[in-house]
Length: 311
Image (cartoon, rainbow, N blue to C red):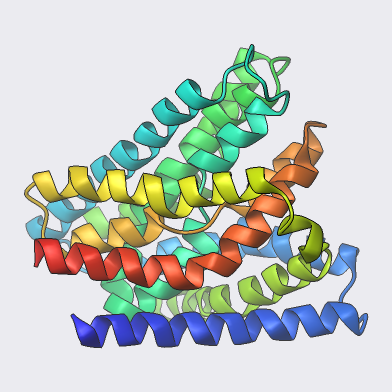
């Protein structure tokens, strides 16, 4: 257990150092808003897809197929639980006008940019393989539940199209094709995909660092509601999820991989989607910033507790 926690903490320190580089680059104007937006587009459309496809470049085995199904089930449980809690706590007729943004912050985690590098450090390509299921479920719910929360005006046909056709679902279809059939990517193409996948950690951390540089951190830490949402996202929901996972017949690596994704900080996409649909994206931005900073403490704590209780 101690070795895995040390690996996790070391990887988090590396990631925060990379964030610091992104922070400095933005402050020195090596990066600007347009540059970070372009990098984000490359990450979400190309790099993240390559990460998923690369993780499926392995020979099919029944044990791997079972693990993939179970990881998808765990992802639905974790995110479904967050949706239920969000629906209860943040109501349209409640005291918070930005209830939809609060629901988004509670449900969607940074399982791609933060979760996958941690899983890579802990469990290598197998961890990324398991984490890919969480990302696919995240994308399915983002383009269905998420869009429905932020905009009631999106036609049903467009919502269905968004769910079926997005980088996450397309990449996992490609990955599953190679995983479930005897076919494999040609060596040259596989190397190119692997190189693109390796960009996920450094480029994502640069983008997050540049994003933090645009936040007024002092105002973030003065908002009690930001602390409330951050504690829900980083502590309450992961602990509830862990309690359910411990009741299921899950193998240690599978359980902890899913917990890393479920315990990740609030997803940056909550702020980006809020801006797109003209909701209170500045509140989401503050929660993203604070939860990202505190996740360096909470994620190792959650995984340590899970290992202690579940072996």
